[in-house]
Image 1 (cartoon, rainbow, N blue to C red):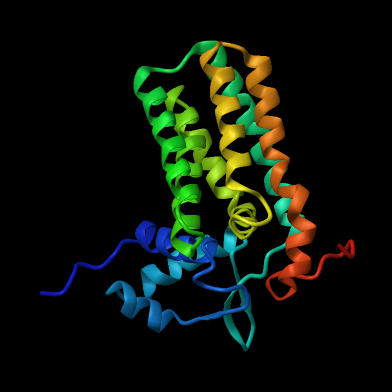
Image 2 (cartoon, rainbow, N blue to C red):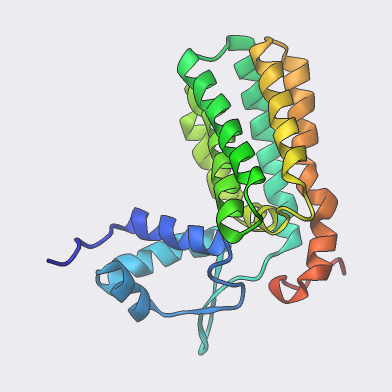
Length: 231
């Protein structure tokens, strides 16, 4: 018996993950027919999922040529970082002021442990993916813990380009131990009820990827879109 078709949200999430984790490479052509076969569905939900990915800047449609995974834009990464920085600083400040439920604290500690396990494993695609998934869980838990899951959905939509360069930075450009230490500092500021410390730690953390962005582009020029600023 064949598996039931995947819905639009599931198709979108699966393709987005493949793009963020670079299983689908920037510039790679996508086929609606092949994707429909992969997900056991018609082309209609696949097309709807692709529209969402186009809106997020992860897919380009080139007339007379087809649909392609977009190349990474440093300008888009900067915009995403601007939005994410503002929202996440506000989230951790609120969490430090209001406090977190015990379940959220346990989830945050668990996310850090998962990152430590990924960092201790031999460098590989799998360990980088596990680290990134735990990173997302860490950040998302703050929003959910203070009842702002809908705000995290905004962050999630905005950070797609940011996520790809973040993944490329692991583990050589951005040591995992540095990111774990920053997460611990953010969590300490929140659990100590110190909004200023939580905000300062989050500011430092949000600046980390942009420190290495130009170097990553220089190392992987084929994955990046031309930048109007010449960067």
